Length: 326
Image (tube, rainbow, N blue to C red; front, side):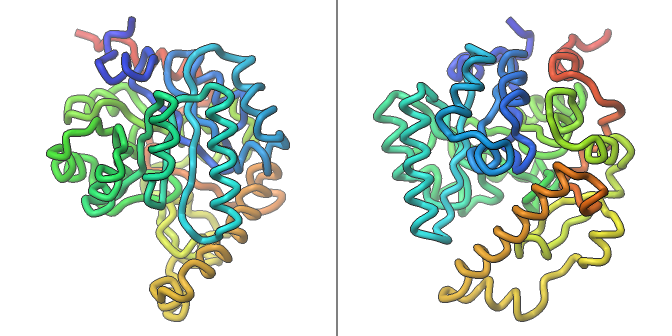
């Protein structure tokens, strides 16, 4: 058993307190399975699985299960931008439950219906939050833990540091998972010393041999430093962390006044979010598969600072969890 294992790990059935965050478009089955096989928790991202990697959902889940017998989780984005999308996501959750998945990570909406489904099967639900008000919604919906997305995260990020967010949420009495800023053994130790039960990483796992992201993407992460990470609102209307490239600078970092108004207006916010999502999903998919030949546009967090080379998932997790030197 890992020296970093704790009661939360035991409850999840994993060896190390390390999650590989669900990533569009980078969560290919081989990466998800490799993280779980190495003792962490791989997370299936269904949109990535189906629309980037070409699997029907059930077949994709079975592919992961054929590669590892250890626990994997399933990511359910439940923001109500489309009734059709929500119906589809509910069906996907049903399929995941049928395939034996019992750990679910929800984001963006009120997770009460997912919680009911999953708890009825004896499973657990963890929910992404960036601040206290959303954590209260999740707690009241009955979730079993909170993924605390801080201001160091890649992709969509929060506005608060890991320490501040932990202090804000610890009184809720739920396991807290630090999401953002961790790519090294020292970073993992610091998060656990703060009181977090586990960490969720993404950027460092992109730069692994099992991730099938384009080599340009991996090399960009290895070469980047924390100062090269910027937050742009031009992808989805809310801040998203990316490597600061010529493409990003051309696009700009701030949403226009009209875009911000549309995002705040109750009658239009769901439509503008849907528009942003469709546009960004296409760009991310193409840059992931074609690299600089399409667009020099890569999501990553400030944890790039600790990513020095491309290695296997097992090597990365071994480095993260090796005993501290005396």
